[in-house]
Image (cartoon, rainbow, N blue to C red; front, side, top):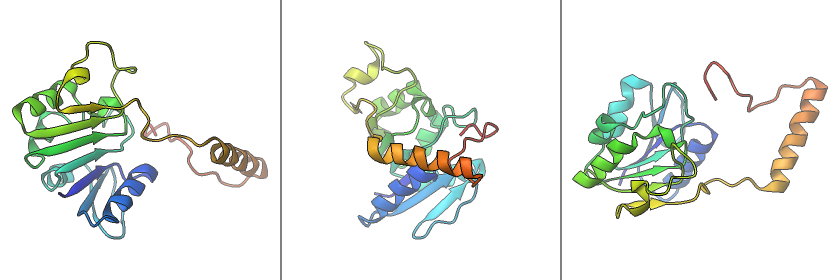
Length: 176
């Protein structure tokens, strides 16, 4: 049951380390090369097919950009190992909904657990609501704890006021 985590930023790296802690074989995929202890990280479009071919449980933790919209399309799903599981905790539009439904119906993908959707809230009547191989959750995969969140905001404001560098700044060119 090799697990592949797409998106090796702060969220994806935590997911990958947690899964690796249960002795699952883990690999990651990132837009750019990254070194991670304990597992291989594939990088860029050139290594995407190799990453997908080595993956049976696909976890999406990517931001949504022009490059990642529908990154999980029919070709990507066909490249996964047979009987794959797809888990999306990133952004809904990472997945081509029609391609995922077709892969589920064909048996290529055994199940999908989806916490995010291209349109939120997920519209009444969407096929995900009634598909027997889809589990829908209400965008709760990552909650913000109030006290630590406020402390983080305060610390960043204070750092900015001192002229110190602040991490977590959105790069508008990259889109995240």
